[in-house]
Length: 228
Image (cartoon, rainbow, N blue to C red; front, side):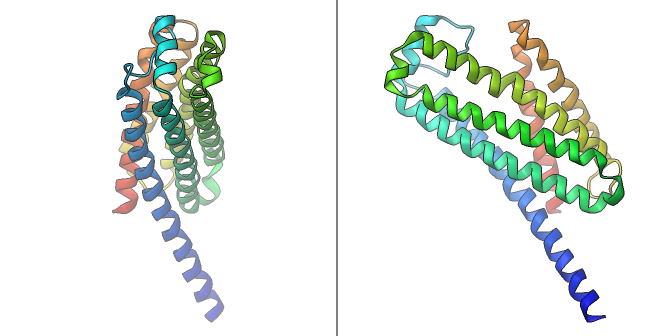
């Protein structure tokens, strides 16, 4: 009897810890996104350039804003790590309640890990763009800049679509979150999946900031519901 009670208390403690991890990592992710946005916009030579912009402007940006670009890369690495923790802890909380109905959550976890990995790759590429030897070579700048866009843009967001979609489907099988959170996630997943168009038609890149706002709203809603 004592052993059973002890096991139950340990399970409750682990569940509470995981819930706090969801809240802390989710809010950290949102806060760090704001910091990354600041470093991307507040630059001596203008805001972070689009890979479809003027080549001269792109080269000037990376040659004149090296400390800010380096800081942006470091912050993006922290964004990636906080997202990975959020993906792992949020799927863990859902899995603890879903039990045998948790098949979607393995897909959600895989999508979250891949999305976080692409963010980390973006951070590495952006940091590399701050190096003087690279900033002086236009072909290298263009190649790394394009790769950073693909990794942090379409590739990351497509993985987010899997994470949002599978997590939202799992929400319907649990009592942890409200159904409107699931519907918000499914809407975000649908919009995120549409970003594949940005890989073949660059004007569709305007979908990317919309998907990030939907992801931020979804993360915030989960943090609120788990905390309350």
